[in-house]
Length: 389
Image (cartoon, rainbow, N blue to C red; front, top):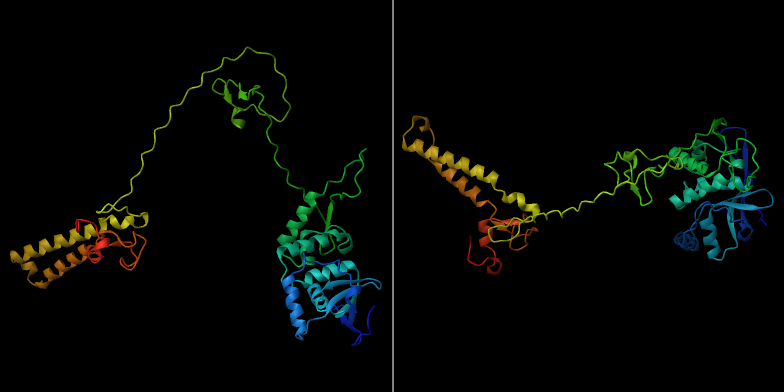
């Protein structure tokens, strides 16, 4: 079954203790391998093809890891490498043969996926944890805690705790006293203690109890209407907890009472239609998009123009009246105020850009609107009839 090893047997000391693990570096027949302990959810065809091409080109791959009890040989790590070698027509493959059980192969293979080869997916991790959970008696000696499960599988502690909690919720509770009903042998019973990584036993936390749904209102008649007198004289659909007549106990029969006079339902008049909000338009009747509507408000620029205009009037009056306070003011200050007024006035939005309809283009410098000068530079076919308004 196994060819003569090309290298001698070696011993590896684990964890700094006295325990030694024997490894044999040899070649093993692919047909003799047990491939039933794949810890991934499945193999990837693209990865197998890439490995096969690399092997054909002479690339060196690490030896696959195999566990054996002397009779069976369980492949623990290297499923993609074995498939690639088999695809290339190889009958044997270099292997690191170790003594151990199928449980040892499962734990080693799942944790080895996190260190080398194709990165495990979320489905691969769930599949590996499920395999460890099914072998919990042999691996942990009982039901593990979430932290113990996470440490063994190489995942985060919240992931391990969530996995164990979900599996415990699926298991029925053990009967507190003998009953005539026999428990199905295939149905596992929820354990009462969990085994931690330190070997101690911990009690199982009780599963959260879902709140009970309220029963049918005791005031509801056969047609589904509430007859509670506190609910505006009855004759209305039951409003649930507000009615105060719901209970989880079965409905108790009530003595016959006088028939309730049916109430007249008021016909509600249709609500008036909401007025359609009109979109603002520019001076040429083009709708102003919401994104640039704030620019057409004009209140900010109008305030600035008003301030400049007041300053011009005050400065001109001071010059005309030969006010001594203006003796040191240069005459070109009035010219600068006139220029500032013209510049700000020319920067006011004139209309929505006729070229892009407000979406932004080179003609409007990506603003979506144009000034009066920019509008005049538009081609005639993009100008409104009647000239500038």
